Length: 79
Image 1 (cartoon, one colour):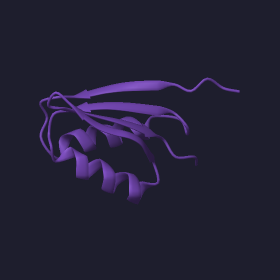
Image 2 (cartoon, helix red, strand yellow):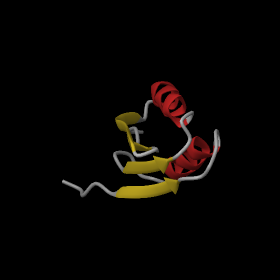
Image 3 (cartoon, rainbow, N blue to C red):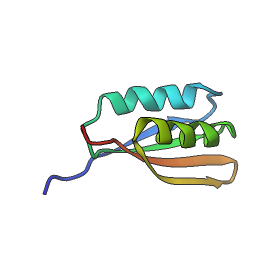
């Protein structure tokens, strides 16, 4: 079984829609099944990532808030 790669994207300080745009760019360059962990500080990113996941087919495995930061874990869809 191939090892799953995980990439960290720190989008702290960026405002909507930049965290999501940066995440989309990162996912485009990743193989299917790869994981993208995103850190953001924009509260609007919560809805952005939920909608993006639902529309794109990339799985949102984690979405949590802690100390004013938002953490997401996305899995690149197959194909």
